[in-house]
Image (cartoon, rainbow, N blue to C red; front, side):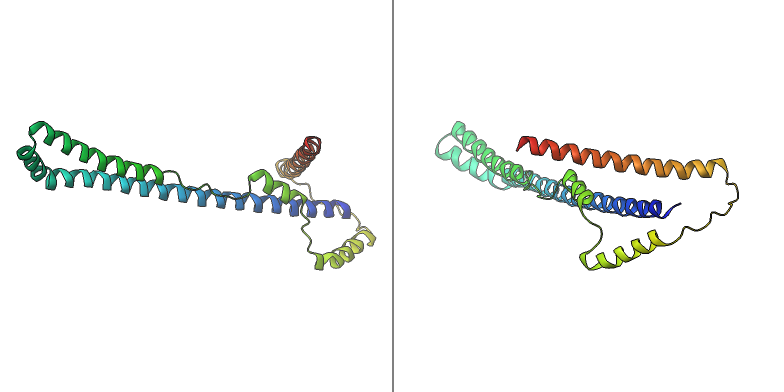
Length: 191
């Protein structure tokens, strides 16, 4: 492999590493959001259970005494209506609180497309490393090429696997770069 091919391979590995980090970060944010949604559902279930508990406690503790008092004071029909209304009010309040708990605040984090764009556009070399990278690149390009040695023949399966990985990496890189260019052109036309 020539020096420029080695540099291209190294640059490609850096870009793929950045894309992997962006994907990992997105997956982490999605997992955190899913965890928050699950905890919201658990809270809602607990509030629904509390609504059921209030309903049962109201039935067992207050219903008999309240019903008897209203029946003696106002009559049997009014007693049934008052007890039913009170139970319905408590149930509606608990269900309302549970419904609010089911809708947590939406999480705000960058979208996957934004992260991939940043990973593709960003420079993997820090500003403090630019001189060292320039010197290393110049040394590689100026150095005389090493004579090719005859290698032992590798099996067909090994060589096609290595070429397949290289081709897949190049196709992925070309697709991502083409996608970024199309998105940028579309953005410029919209603006």
